[in-house]
Length: 199
Image (cartoon, rainbow, N blue to C red; front, top):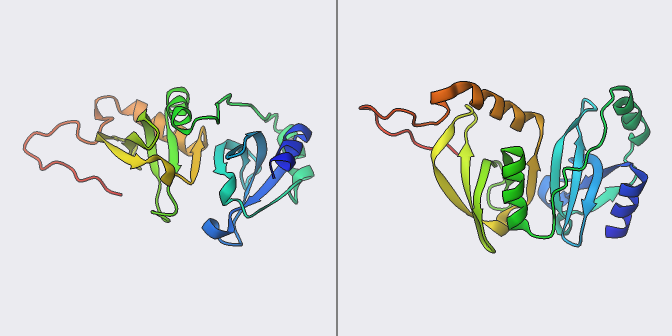
């Protein structure tokens, strides 16, 4: 598989990747291969509207099948060219997962982490403030674009998918930066009961 992913990277084609055990047979990811090693592949995503929309890292052990080139490769590449959207390498290092998460957080401000085997319907979004060989600590941001007032620890190898640099992460950061003093969930305690984190 690694050889075929490398071919897709050098030929600058869109690939379609399936993770049937996790996503089911009718879901897939389309994107350009930016980098790959024996464990992970980094893609720049092509969304349903044929725009480049951030990056995704998948684990090779979870990939059940992939198509190179993707079914609409020529069309997607032509539309992106007409829109002057160019594939860009985020220059993140896939060799160490813990270092990778911290680097993405520092460079992009937010990272979206999926743990689909333990939490199939949810994800965590935030910035990784610490990571070691087994765990990572995340300062999380809610869907209202406010930071939670505490950090949360998770198992590093529960992660099944990593996303960053996309439109949704950008929207959260934009809204949060506009909030000023209200950018945290618990900006002012006063006499109110502390807010409870919503998963």
